[in-house]
Image 1: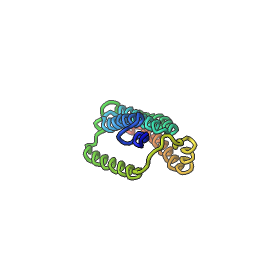
Image 2 (image 1 turned 30 degrees about the vertical axis):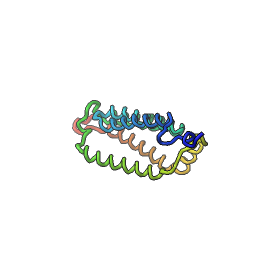
Image 3 (image 1 turned 45 degrees about the vertical axis):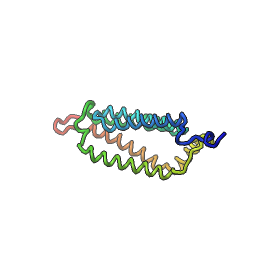
Image 4 (image 1 turned 90 degrees about the vertical axis):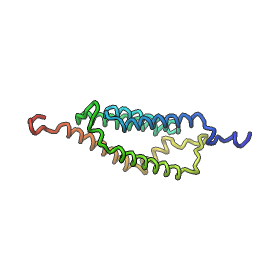
Amino acid sequence: MSLAAAHSGFLSPTGVEIAFVLVGIATLGAALVTVSTKQLVHAALWLVVALGGLAVEYLLLTAEFIAWVQVLIYVGSVVVLLLFGLMLTKAPIGRSPDADSGNRWAALVVAVASAATLVWVVVDAFRATWINLDGAVQGSTKVTGQILFQHWVLPFEALSVLLLAALVGAIVLSRRTDRKNGAR
């Protein structure tokens, strides 16, 4: 067997690589609809699709634990908290004129610059790195748990405090008394 046939390269993608690209394109499309829609509830539901696509990408990378954390924490908790906050603050359900600040071009420039920087950093960092899919599992629960709770416990807890503060803020805003009518 020749060396070219033994090692799949860039020009001979496997089924997993093709699925990864297709799911990535669908996830990117859902993310673009999330930030471009003027209906806040629809944006939250498209966010569910985008975060679910990321979970599928983690599954394709054989990181099952991270995929389930993505589904449980982000899709399950964060989006429910977001929808709960929208309902408590009495945000408009339909089209909202307040959802568009008129800064689309500035936002587009910042988004493209951020995306280009992120792609450049990732490509530069992993330029000569190849993932051996036949070797030991790198995204195992044991390794991920050790890294998460040894090195990343403070940011993990800071995120939970931030989500709790957002929930308390939504409750306070929803229960604010109407000073004109004296009603709650």
